[in-house]
Image (tube, rainbow, N blue to C red):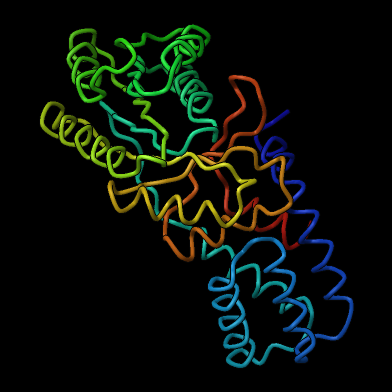
Length: 299
């Protein structure tokens, strides 16, 4: 299955749910109050969220008036442009050495995502090191080691309960010695002890800044698409502690409410970078706003 097919398959439930309703809506009359009410209902039902839905509708009405739009095809085209613009962030190209810190709550797929990224970067010809910075959860390092072995990359870890920042420090020094140009850092995913977790993330950030100044720094949060609007609060929470540069979205294939992607982009202004497209180690792809929006609008 090609990249295009994998992404289409991952977003099929969301695309089918929205595009079916939109196509049904567009077969009726457009531009009436009933049309806008129904469009609002469709967007809200896909978890796009009230704030972002209002923004989309306002922009659509404004452009329809400004451009004197009257036909169904013109309305669809304008809606496509508005939704695409919401997701179309300028994402800088990677520079190496590269350090990616992975954050997120428990159960969203952080360990799996790190394993997939390690495999992806290695296949691109990079030397990859994983830092097992989740020293809080029992067996976290053991699970990460399994993925490191699958990807064929090194892992630096310490005992359970060790200082996470010291693990990261050791990983940086080791990567420098071994000439590894990509470091993937796992972090603890607990929210019940929010203050301590966020302070730990800040400390890890400081360690990287101090000891690997020449590296490009990227912070990603892993989100479970099936959590819907809760994903927005997770981005907001982690963004307060560390600047989140992008999102790795998992389990998108398991929900019809992937419209939360628009809500996150609209409210938090954070782009989706990768999408998990399956269970195997190769099942991770760069997110494509064009494919996502086209699938939603046109099915």
